[in-house]
Image 1: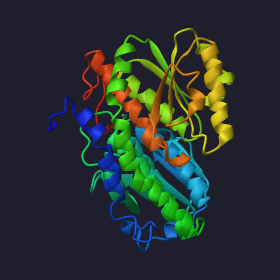
Image 2: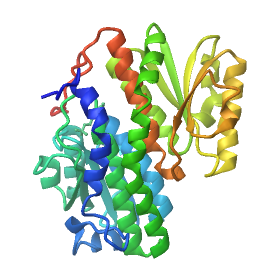
Image 3: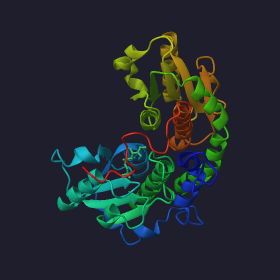
Image 4: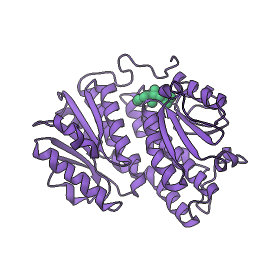
Length: 369
Ligand code: F6R
């Protein structure tokens, strides 16, 4: 039931505040520490390891890429992300000191399931982040942290993605607590940031109309580029994937720092480029580097759509359009910055008269390898 929405995707995009809130529910204690009841008594999954490998496909892999920054920053443990279908075919180095974390909305993606089985057979510990109770991947894993996004019907993942980032952040904070790498005060600060996200997503959703207008203006674009840096990089990849799968427009995401190493050659007058601008309150160096990237592409005629923190005046002179997101600590910005991209891709597909819930050639759950 679409509940009055024109599509399941439109409904699911607006359900994102709940997807985050429900994934947090029961996992933040009164003293603001993280408690994940499913992981009670499983501390040895996190103490006896020296490495975390995240395996996933598609959008779920981008949630993993965002999670890598949090795992390394908070839990001080080396983390890498690998596409599940690449993982087991290259004789990866894993052992009993490796925790393999899989991320899957459906819990049935064959590529990811086979990666988890491979990890277990080779002695690694396994933990599943999954949105579907009792699905195959969590059943094949040593532990599971469920996302509570509710059933996702539209083929393109939206609310499951923000729930996946929320879950891997909770996991990173749990591992950090178990390993003693964050103080109680720091933990409380991070859980407060997480609890504030649902309200902030509501604020982003209020801009749906202007983003829809932008999508209509841009509906005859032949290619659209996405740039981001730090946690904004996986968000650029996700923005590009959403546009490919929904609007059938060629789209690429790049790390902003890569521009001068090649992709800037693509910039010609009129080329639309989305740029995820990191908060100036995080690293001012990172912020000013991305602002100079914007100047560089603008000087070559790019049409810049910046997704920037409210009040970030530095981007205003150089961007054709600025979409503002509420203030959040730098690691939490992905949960907000992805939302305008989802709306943009959906509305551009709508403008082209396409079926946003059921894009051509795609299945919701890929149960073949
Ligand atoms: C993109 C999308 C896919 C899935 C991928 C993994 O919008 O939905 O890229 O993220 O097929 O699916 P799950 O999470 O079910 O393993």
